[in-house]
Length: 89
Image (cartoon, rainbow, N blue to C red; front, side, top):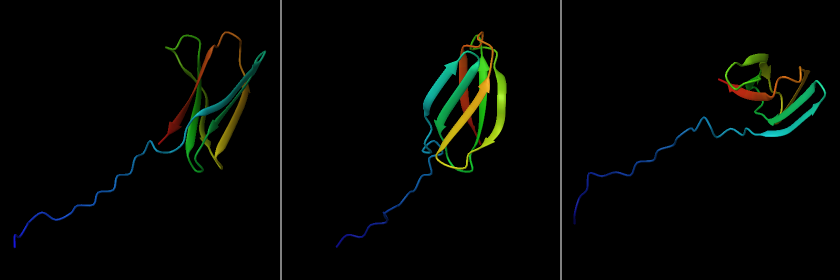
């Protein structure tokens, strides 16, 4: 009989990036812009816009999701070409 000092170890990791997030729809008509993304209830989001990928303007901050999908709409000049959604901690 052989004794061992090696006990099994059970490790559980909580991946903060496991929450769903994907832009599911984007529509632009003249100056009207509508973004829809997967969201987590209770999670906050920020929407930003840029004309050059360098300078970003916050369009909306601390948007609180209440279900699994969030839709944000606004109007913005045609010179803005890029939009992004950030999940806040």
